[in-house]
Amino acid sequence: VQLQASGGGLVQAGGSLRLSCAASGRAFSGNNMGWFRQYPGKEREFLVFFRWNGGRTYYADSVKGRLTLSRDNAKNTVYLQMDSLKPEDTAVYYCALDTPPLTIPSGLYSARGYDYWGQGTQVTVSS
Image 1 (spheres, rainbow, N blue to C red):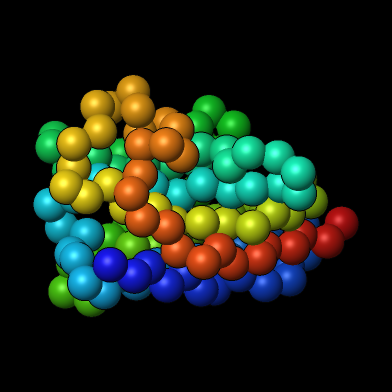
Image 2 (image 1 turned 180 degrees about the vertical axis):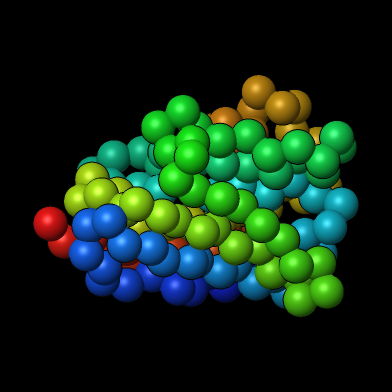
């Protein structure tokens, strides 16, 4: 299973970016997936996950209303639309897959709940 994250870059505060995560070797459909970010020297921070069983999406309070997760099953790709970006959003962003989808819901808030990770994509927001 490989996850390829892309779409990061440099954007001014208040701007938007859309990150993509394409999967090969396993479908997103039928599995749980999430997005995290990591600041230098810090652990990965939960942003959002989609839980296959129930079809719900869960966002971290800190990003709710600014980030939107979407999926294109035909392309086996998930997206993270990020709006109203702030300088504190500057970080490396990672997508992750829990497959088979065995992690309990509370575990999907933690990086330990996922089996596969993309390589990360840098997002830099200038003030």
